Structure formats: structure tokens, C-alpha cells
Length: 433
Ligand code: SF4
Ligand code: SF4
Image 1 (cartoon, protein in one colour):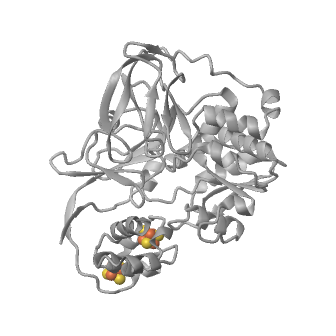
Image 2 (image 1 turned 180 degrees about the vertical axis):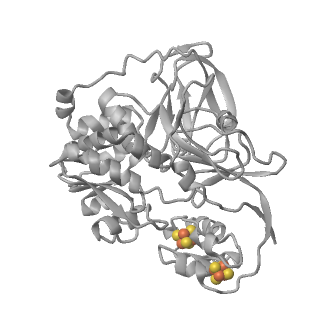
Image 3 (image 1 turned 90 degrees about the horizontal axis):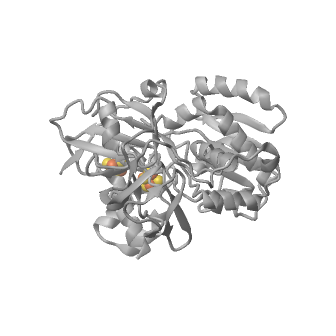
């Protein structure tokens, strides 16, 4: 079987050293009407209306929560336009023509330290809900729902591990915004009356270690410390991070809050800082545009709603324009591929990887067991694949594919170059029927 895919040749070390380029003045920004968690939406504006930066211009509705849509620049609402969403679907986007005036909405206000000190956990939960704060590490899980736990929290873990190849945006965030991150951690500790927090990074990130060792001296006695964990994939998976940072092994499906742990991604903390300090939603984020399909991989700070096409131009365009491309949003292991570069940066796009498409031959399974040995949740991917091929639903269910975290390791390690993870995804769908 011939499979169209792309080779992974990591450029992480090179791009991680480059400062993020500020590209915050695109002519247009595009905001998704709906997303995977909120499939319905309503607009509060009509064509021709002027909008302020951070103004609520609509509301997304999902089965479990609602999510305000904030304008990420000031300007004029032009109309709806279709582009690819992170979920790979063509979606309606709200198109706003930037007036480059950065006229802020009146809801944005600076809180003094005294005002922040007076905020309760419930106050912060409401602020994060109004600011539509979500996990910016790619999960898009609403932060305010994490805050609604009634379990006592005695440890906050900040995930700065960024373990997938290629992606370096969190690396840059950690180097460039240490004070925002540390202050945001203090806000969360204050909300939960939590005495202790650990910032988790890979041991090999010497530059981050140096910066935080220095910065944390100014926060002596705060209960915040740096925690260096392993350099392997998937160390950033919350179960692996918690095990490394605390020694606690979560049971399958167990929530960290059950053990008194709250974990948040480092980029989420930068957004949370702005929400608590300035009552601002996330209107900008850091992303990595990389892959050996483009000339000059870079890190960027961009407005949410920026077109990827514009960023690719700043990266010098394609290295081999004549070759077909693979576009991955997120990391190469867990990201999703989209059919073209007509993609928009949403809050949850951490990176765009552009690779030249290559053909290779998928061979029959040789029963080497590599996929079984590599699986971090101890599944038997090869057995699941075989059960999917024979459509044996009972066997599929017994093999528990729903525990799969879609880390992609079974595909990556497969001797026969079989897309094993795709079979596991199918098994998950079958098991849910
Ligand atoms: S993607 Fe493969 S290796 Fe990763 S958890 Fe799922 S079955 Fe295991
Ligand atoms: S790694 Fe590939 S070849 Fe080896 S047992 Fe798993 S599916 Fe078969």
C-alpha cells in the first residue's frame, strides 16, 4: 500500500533560539463562528458595524457551556468568509477589517494589586468565563471549568514541557514572559489558597532553567519552584508530568484534582495573567511556523484570527513550491492535518508544520511488538488494529481503545510504517457505538 505522508526532521533546537516576531497588524482578522466544543453561534453585530478590540461580538453555544467571541482588533465587520478551522473543516469566519487604531473596549480595565488580592476564587472563575479563557496548549478546555472544582488544591503544576518535536512557541513564551507567568501562578495560588506550585520543564532546557532560577529569587517564599522532568515524549502528557513531578500515578481516567493537583499550560498562564490583571480576553498568542517544507521557520506573536498564508510569506514561502505539501496544526504526533494553507490561527493553534509530501510503502505487520512496547497507556495497538480490520466489535471493546491518548507513538515506531494510530481512532469510534 502506498501512503502519502511526510518525513519528520526536527528543527526544534534551531527555531527555539529565535525570538518571536511580532506580527500583530494584519489587514484582516478572521474569527471562527463555531468550534468543536461549541457547534452553534449567534452574532451580535451586522455588516458595516464598527467593533472595538476585545468587544464581545457574538456567543458560541455548546452542550455544556457558552463561549463569548471577542474581536481581536478594532475595525469594521465586513461579513462571513469560509476558511479551514483547526478541526480540518471549512468553517464560517467573521471577517474584520483592521483600522489599526487598537481602540480598546470599555470592558478592559487595569486591576490594582489590592483589587486582585480581594478577588475570590469565584470572582476569578467569572472573569475567566467572561474572558473565554481556554487551554492554550491545544486542549481548548475552558479554564473557568477547571476553577469550578470543589476539591482542595495543594499543588499547581504548570506545564512548560512542550514535548512534541518541532514546536517551540512555549519555549519562547517562557523565556520572554517569566514575570507574567510567575504572577499568574500567584493569582491561581491565591484563588485556591494553594501553598505550592511547580513549573515543569524538560531537564535539557538550560536557558529556561537559568531565567527562572534568577526570576524566582525575587519570589522567595512564594512556594513556586522549578521542576525539571524527563526529556522524552510524551512527558508533557498530564499523567506522565504528574508522575515525574510528584511520584503520583493517576489511575486511568482519574482527574488530577482528585489528588489535589491542578495543572495548567504555560501559555494558558500568560492569557490568564492578562484576564485577571487587565480583564482582557486572549487576543494574541505565540505560535511556531516550521517544518522542512518552508524556507525560514519562525516563532511569532500574532493576533488570534491571523491568516496562516500571511505568516508563510514572512517565513520566505515554500522551499520547494513544486512539491505537494502536508499541513499539520499542532505537533507532528498529536496534531491534525488540514488540506491547505488556507487556515486561520485560533486560540488553540500552537503551531503550523509544513512538510513536503513523500510517498512510502506501507508493509504488512511483522508482529515486532514495537507499537505495544511504545504505548504509554499500555494498550496493544497491533491487536486493536487487527480487531478493527475484522470489525470485531466485542474484541475492540475488550482492548479498551478509549484509553488511547492519541500520542502517535504506535505509528511513529511501527517497523512496517503502518498508520497504526488511525486504526486506533477508528476503534475508538466503533467502541463508542
Ligand atoms: S496513539 Fe498508539 S501508542 Fe499512543 S496511546 Fe494510542 S495506542 Fe498507545
Ligand atoms: S509496530 Fe507495526 S509491525 Fe510491529 S507489531 Fe505493531 S503494527 Fe505490527
